[in-house]
Image (tube, rainbow, N blue to C red; front, side, top):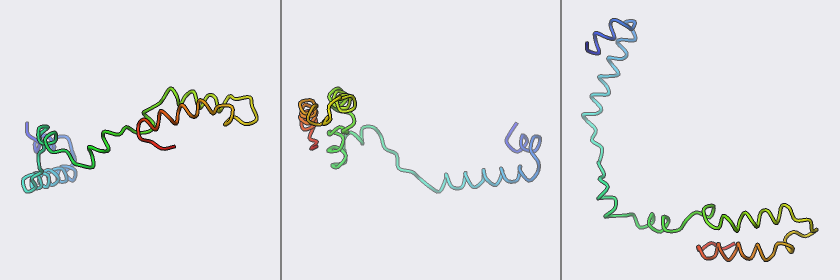
Length: 105
């Protein structure tokens, strides 16, 4: 059973005509448009210069997670009036870790 027979049996005439027209347009477009194909070898052989720099440097949210958690806990749950001075060694440890990945805080 082909699409025309199936659409005539199951769908109203207006819907059937619409689907036939849609199918005709899709076939016409697919034959007139050619999309470039990229093989994995081509991508690996010629990386984009900007992308390689961005890919080598991780996002700030993905590094120093343990130090960040310690810093946040210290700042949030500190009983002192000035949590920044109370947590200074932990904050400095976090800044040092981030600087190791090239981030300035």
